[in-house]
Image (cartoon, rainbow, N blue to C red; front, side, top):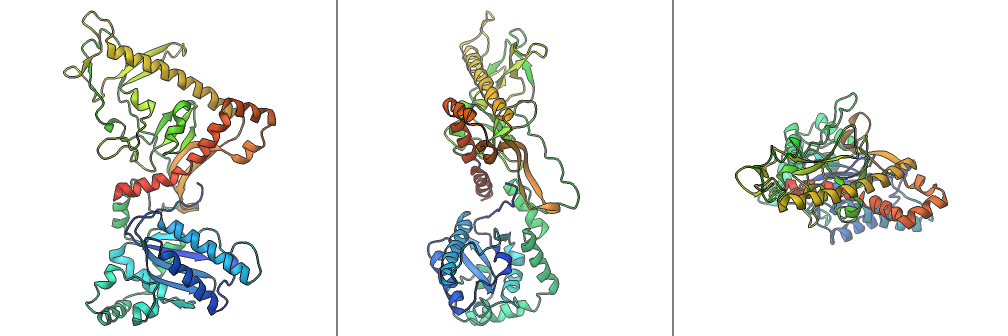
Amino acid sequence: MARKTRVFIENIPVHILLKSLNSMDIFLDLEDQNYFKKLIKKILAQASLEIHSYFLSKNSFEFLATPKDIDVIPKFMQSLGRQYVVYYNKKYDRTGTLWDGRYKSSIVEPDNLLFDVMFYIETNNDSLTSSYNKNFEDKEDNLITYHELYKDLGFTQESRTKNYKELFNDFTEEKSKFVETCIDKQNITASKNFINDLENKLGILLQTKKRGRPKKIKKDKKMYKNLQILDKEKHKDLKISPMSDLFFAKELNSIPVMLTEASQIALTFPVVFSKGENKGLISLLSIGDVNLAVTNEGKWITKYLPIALRKYPFAIGSVKDKPEQKLIMIDEDSPLVSKSKGKQLFKKDGEQSELLENAIKFLTQSEQQVQITKKIVEEIEKSGILEDREISLGEGEEKKVLVSGFMVVDKDKLNKLSDDILASWVRRGIITFIDLHLKSLDNINLLFNLANQRQN
């Protein structure tokens, strides 16, 4: 999670750069080039991906493509990289990877910068082979699919190549440097307006930060607006309406999780450890300011609705000097609370209504789960196996922190615990929960996918 997090968007082109390890030559002869291109063609036949321009140098592969599915590029790059390593190592009798870590990527604004990126790629001086002959000269190249904007350059291929060449006359050194900087730093290759529009749609920060220390992350917005101790005199006329939507939770960035429900929530969202005084489990629901678990219609995206939401508009509070003494509370400003519609909280004689009795019973049961969860979390934290984590884009001065203030289990520290502790945790189900927690971290990618879907 400390490394750069990728964002891909359906039908929006992306610039990709894959370099070799230590700049070693990985295309030593024409056979290597042809095999690599055959691999690309083979994988493209099974992928929803269109390549518009590319080049191969002795130690890199760079291309511009449009994904039709948001997860197609990671799968394409993984398959291409792995299969070529097998071929190369067998041919040249070696072992180990060929690639310099992860590939670099940059979303490209199509209307204004598509052709600039294509020109940058196809006029690379170090190119062994490229799509130059296809887009500039109309020579055969079965790896290329013309982008719609390229097709719009003319009604015949002759007119398209002619107009494409004329556009190249406006490709300046300044434009080339901009494209190079964007892919090198993995910034979006786009205008500020385009980036701002994407940020608003996705609900995440995409622009490069200015130099200096990163700003503090906003604290989680609250679901309860005006919690008050429930009083049969003060609230005798209050009524509660059924929960028809979850708009009251639309600004939540995370939500408390009980151990008993962790397995269900972890199927979709990351379940992590909260920091601060209130030790517990939380589920991350956002990578910006938008709760990705609540749809635009105000519905939860999965069948299971977390306990923390089912309690609303009620809550349990504690007396400051006597934390063991619990109080029933209600959000007076909740849209579910009114004096005109819904079911009464109290009967005419001041006794609790059936609705209130059931609510208090549910609150009491959930509070028991809160305390059980808290004790287990405190035990795990006390063992020293938790470490701070964050979700971010970029590195160094360009780092953009999207989510912070949570902890996860460090696998190495977990494995170093004494055998008696591990045995005890196995018997008590703690190890099962930790495995579930670690597996749920894969859902961080799902948060980005949900953000992309929300935008579409």
